[in-house]
Length: 281
Image (cartoon, rainbow, N blue to C red; front, side, top):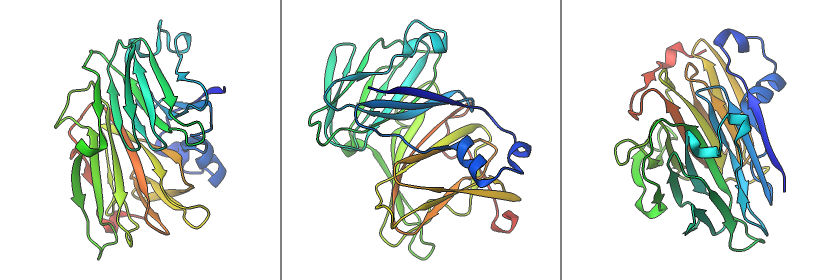
């Protein structure tokens, strides 16, 4: 079993002005999330989010982070969101076991001492995408079945952005300290996940792009300031860190899906600053 957590630092708009393609990828892209039997995480200094993939195979896996975070156990001062994009698996949370089929989610509150991740079939392993953020208060653990996710259709075919946003962890339906998390699915024929673009000055966001064929499809994730945009080409099951000051939108060669996660000082989903199309460069 490989356990890996890399650190990525925060950047100002001036920092990335002269970054090469490789520098942009090194600083903002998590190229490998899911590897059988492994836990692969990134710690970003952007609001101190930890995110990545847990892929149990033959054995149960547990995220063990203590001294690196200055705590006695991983969730002593953190909350955790989980969405399974792989085969059927299970979570055992402080001794209570629950099944997790594909696209099911789970919220785990501060103070939970043990979370075990398992796959039902090692040949079709669960792929748990996990996101953890600092927390100041304990909120109840809660299973978030995909069937119960709050669905919000948006966009249209004319603008190539017809999609459904499924909100799992959202302030309109449950309490958390700061974590928000959901899953967006584009319709066939749509390519843009949002455009015009916007920024989230009061919270950062990560995007984990998934559910498209390789090598036929790639996603172009657009970030940077409105007046100086950058892009990162993203493959299936890769993730991008998007700072709060940066625009964020994406377009691909075919339909796709992605898991978004946000944290910061404001949990209002619609708290965003729109960027007019004529401001983009």
